[in-house]
Image 1 (cartoon, rainbow, N blue to C red):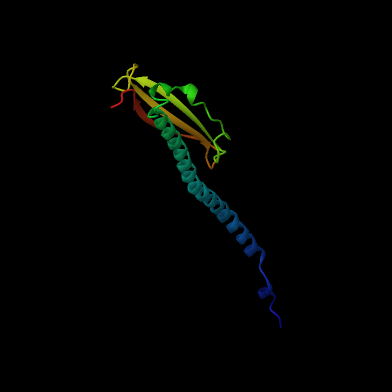
Image 2: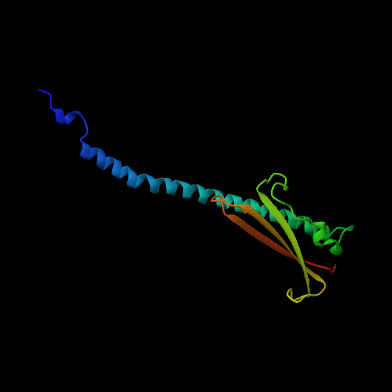
Length: 142
C-alpha cells in the first residue's frame, strides 16, 4: 500500500518555506546591492582624484611656462567643465578656483596663489559626490 504522506509537502511545510524565504531574501539582496556600491564608489572617487590632478598639472605647467607664467593663473583661462565635457569621463564636472594671498596663505594679498580643483560626480547610490585638490603657486621665480 502506498503511503500518501510521503508523496509531497504539507501545507504547513509550504507556508514555513515561504516565510523563511520572505525573511531571508530581502537582506541578501540588500547586502549584494551594498557590496556593489562599496566596490564602485572607490573607483569613481579614484577617477575624480585623477581628473583633479590632471588639471592641477596643467595649471602648474602654465605657471612655469615661458609664455604664460604666474599672471596667466586666472579663472577666465580655466573655464568650468560641465558634465560630459571632460573627454573620456562623461559623468564628471570640473571647476578651478584661484585665491591670491600673502605668504601666510590666508591674508588676501599678492605673491601666492592657492589653486583648487573641484570635481563633482554622481556616486553609485545616486548621491552627488565631490572632491577637491589644491596646490600653491608663487609669483617668485628662483
